[in-house]
Length: 202
Image (cartoon, rainbow, N blue to C red; front, side, top):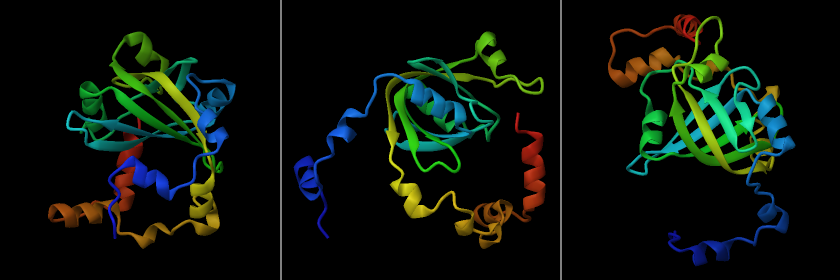
């Protein structure tokens, strides 16, 4: 097996991208991008810390939970999580962020790249209040690139096709896996964990 170490070696293995693929990158969000974001209940967010170590985290809520402030600005609420703050810590060191918006049942995705700043302004957190609870912070993303990504990965994986869904029982519960990984004496059951999650969604 030969390791590829240069752009020339890499490019020699692949055909040149089609003109459409080169030209589809937009500097701002057009109407189609806005519509896609408005229908998306899930976004994967990539960030990079001071050490350049990459991290990807899912962010999800009701469709349209990411607000389009204008054609170059997105607002993303930081809902309760595990409080590790991996992504937010990364963004303090390096504001670069990559977003992948998904819509269940739609094989195409939307990619947005830019920079993110963390805000705790009351007027911003109030925009995302649910059941009297506001996010602690809101990310304001300055959009630099936006483009639609083709459906091939989702077609190959059958990700949205119920006939290909895995039964949850194919894996131990999250509690059981954490018990084994951390050497805990007991394991939280899946039902107990889901109940706890539901109580702390917002």
